[in-house]
Length: 261
Image 1 (cartoon, rainbow, N blue to C red):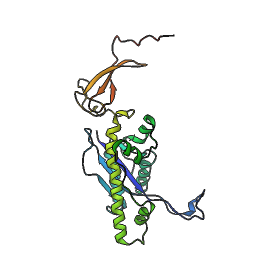
Image 2 (cartoon, rainbow, N blue to C red):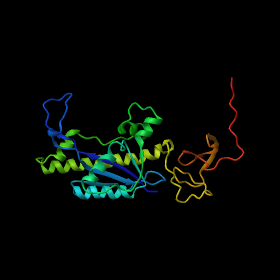
Image 3 (cartoon, rainbow, N blue to C red):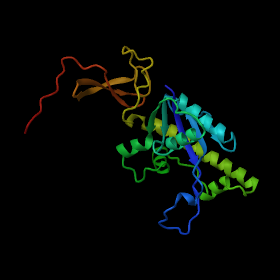
């Protein structure tokens, strides 16, 4: 199963406006609409985070058309895409670019939006990637100068030396986000609801393989799970710490009778 971590950076909308607060921007005030500037991606290993070359595509390295084509090729190969708030941000932005550049849809893939797992399972003080990664990994995003970094990249009248330095910082910032996604995916994997069964390709039912991480001979029996369909054996993986259940109902095992006080 091919699992891709993905993060994009976009330009801001450039608009005409008379004020700073509570502005209603009309379409005829837009000078430059938002666009994807660059993206980082990385094929993840099931065994754990590894130091592998992160893929980086951008307007200033490949050119706009080649960058979008490269992004389309990556998503087209992926079975699972891991991102942070990507369901509402990264993926729709990329799909707009695919349409504008004349590409059709990519092959279907499963999205694992890690921010949804964090919101559903925990209560951190903030659900931003910077805060959660600091809390769980002890490391955060690359620091930068804010909007001035984006202006140095998108504006035409910037000194070439300044622009090149800004592009290098943007690459470092984008690549670091992908590295954080790699580590957070493995940290949060036991908590991800409805994680796809990575062992499907080789698990015939006779093998002891964890459906979350693909580790063999690591499943330990941990009680029984009751559903409307019946009772199933619960398993805990000693490698990734995730829980799963048997495929078949435990024959002859009935749900305990409800005790009424």
